[in-house]
Length: 170
Image (cartoon, rainbow, N blue to C red):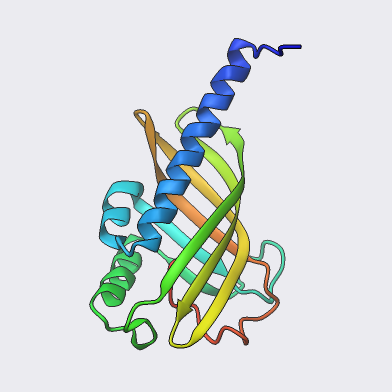
């Protein structure tokens, strides 16, 4: 028995595939420490990258976050990482990202609200850490591709005590 997709369903599958491929490329650039290329080619000028605190659940505007970067702060973070100014990333960690459960939550025409699960394995300095969480993105449509305007990574950890630090971009 063959199941044929309707035109709308086929378009949704193609869009999901394009979004997934975009996220996979982003993960590869981050894993390969091609951070400038990632910043220049995959982010909007008004990017916002945040990682809320692990001990706060729910949406609270006044909650202290682990990371809350605008474009200028993110560019500074990248330069510090690449120039060896972050002591715990000198030498650089090796990372391996797993992206799964990619879902387009809303198609707003000019941008998409996307959710995905993420695991970032980090190896270095005789340690291995796994950062597990959910990623929420706002992807601005740009031709046949996208750019990230918002990137929020909500970690599932209750604490990062075991990890000691969060020095890589999730």
